[in-house]
Image 1 (cartoon, rainbow, N blue to C red):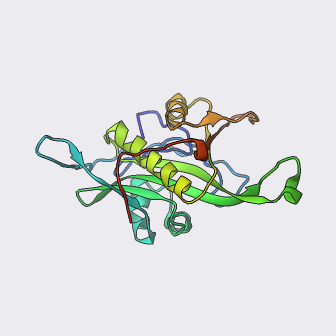
Image 2: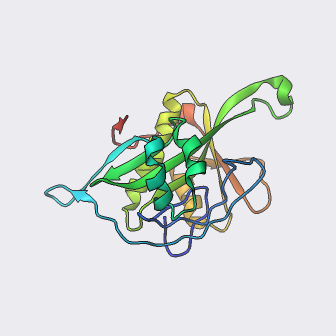
Length: 213
């Protein structure tokens, strides 16, 4: 993301060598911890363009081989040991142009309660967390948005009924970004973190790009 002041969602933007937002991260490793990362700007964005000057880029599923580049894109916020389990799940996407990874949507999946009141007796459901949306510094905002929408489309195609994310209340830019994706604040909130969710089955996320394998 970012603009000078880091955003805070487990939605981060990262420069291509990236700017990473301040972001309360929903636990990739621990379900009880929130993280905060400072954005760091780096240089290096060089998008391929067509004869009209429009950016040419691909959206594809991420894989283990992308870990080192994504760690660099995040400014080191996400080390390989955090990225590898996420990337091997098949639920994360990357944006690629001119041989560079310029964006990424990181998704964490986990087993959650179907009914909070019934607890475990109500059964478990596979849930998805959009924990971070990385984007190279200077990347057009619509490309970051398309990357996130691509991840939502992929989750819906895989049968996930909803998607969750968490954002800092002070992070207006990321709050607006999440709402732009079609997510809404949950009824139950906790101090210092805004929780959002999106009912994928009733949404139609469209990145306007084919998602490649």
